Length: 278
Image 1 (cartoon, rainbow, N blue to C red):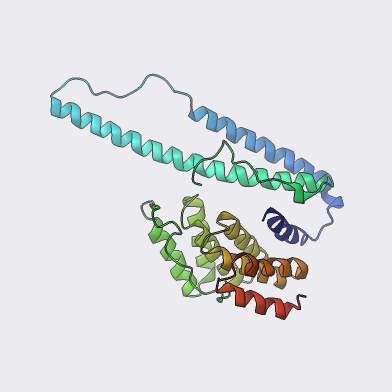
Image 2: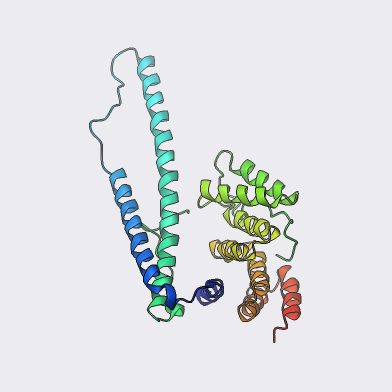
């Protein structure tokens, strides 16, 4: 599966108009700069684990009811702060992990190494425990892949709003809302569907390359879930429209190989026939 992902990502990378050799020095400098930014973010995370002074909880004195009320108020305040920090750190972990994976790929590519030998990128800070043949206007399923997963307050409503914009063919608004959803709810059970919807919205806007990136993210975020066959088909079809015929044929062939009972298999076969895949 890693080879398939790298193959699709390599197809997207090959669309750059400027030869790699002509921008190698600048790219290496960019990589060093991005590593410095990541280092600063890690230092900020470490500071979150340090205390800032004496605790400010005051629950002494008064009657029993007053003390219980004070304790309850402090618990609510601390719970709110914990949720805010958890959300913020989760976004940093997700962003840092993605950027480290991209840096690894680019460094190996610049050094002339074999990108197919790259392993899975380790999640920044360790495991955090969380984090389609239809036309572009087709809505994505609204239910999470894990029926037991709990959604944050407003999460389902935000997804439904983006999905409604997609159904109404308001592609710019749908792309904006899905992107906002993915930023606001990292690791959401609805994330693969949101990425799939974002890809379809971008495709509807004519931005095929960014749509392909979104379809790739949708597949890699849950490569065995209910949206995986659609995401893989959409990725292959998008690569075909970008002129990456070899990568498109391999990707489309994987739909039937990995998900033989999925409805996207027939669409993938038709797309392969249209592209002249052998």
